[in-house]
Amino acid sequence: MQQADEATVSDHLTFTTWIAGIVSRWRLVAFLVVGAIVLAVAATFVIPPVYRSKASFVANSSGSSKLGALGAGSGLGGLLDKLGGGVTGDPSESPIFYVQLLASRELLTRLLETRFPNPRTANARDSATLISILRIRNDDPLRRVELAVKQMSEAISPGWDAKTNLVWFSVDARWPDLSAQIANEAVGLVSSFNREIRVYGSKSKRAFLQMRRDSAQTALRDAEERQRFFYEQNRGFVAAPSLKFEEQRIRRDVDLASDLYINLDRQLEVARIDEINDAALITIVDTAVAPRKAQWPRYGVLLFSAAALGLLAGLTIAGSASILSDWRRRNPGTWAEIRSAVMKPRVGSGQAGPQPVPGSGMNPEPVVYMGPHTSSPSASAATRADDSIGTARRPLV
Image (tube, rainbow, N blue to C red; front, side):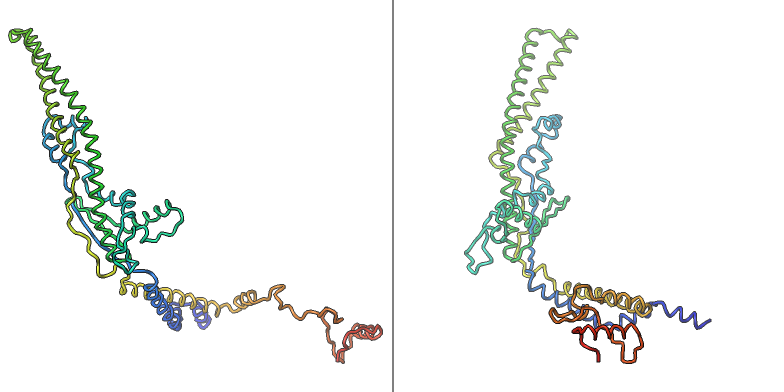
């Protein structure tokens, strides 16, 4: 009874047996590890390297923001914001704006249309547009630009720090000099694009403030005219409470109209200055420098990753083979059926036996040799019938 239990236990695959099966197939594991390393090394010769350049800048406040802050302390700051005259806290001067600007289609399209020294030619004076250097293969020009914009958006990785207003970004390219040139050109495009947008906005703001200032000036003159008329008609208004109350109301209207007119006039002067020169200039912290070492491939990381993947694949395949071998040993009948089903010749595959030759007179049915000592009456009758008929069948010897 004890021997039967031991035999039952030994029929199951144990962890030790499985490990022994993997170890016995160490050549397979070593082959996969070496193959993965060889493929990784070969990939470094096929896939081009990637060089990464970095640049950073700080967004400064524009002149309109600084001068507009002078009127923020007055009681009409909120009113001016509602009227469109408030200019403090401009979201276009935040770091997030510049991060989104670096990823915008307009800036990337301008970057693709900019000419750079062509690194594909030996002559350093040769230049080409960035979209030509990238060699986007597509016959449709619009689709070509779309693919180039997508590729550049993946190559540029921006970031920012909300506390210091610092904006940085990196550019990946196949050539180190081109990577640095693209980064520096992107900074220049950010500054010029920002200047264009702000000058255009300053023109619209100046026109609006001009209209509001003129209406405020008219309202102030009307209030002052009412006050003058009141004083001329009511010289002794101090003795009459109703007239004194009316005088205070008229004075408040004049003060309010005067305050509104002064603030709008100040904002109009700021807008006139901004219309000429409003750039919210950025301060460059780090200019891009051509890197000496490629970002990819990193040979240490690449070889280690390839060896780890090859080892994992080898252990998986060797472990699966060990499990299959143990199952085949414990189920020989099932394995034989599966093998016979797989190796069974198919109909029409040319392995069904000899075929009759046309015109040879051979019977396609198989001929059975009964032997000289066969006592079967049916076989003797068949032989005698063949002899009497004189068929062309070959006699069995």
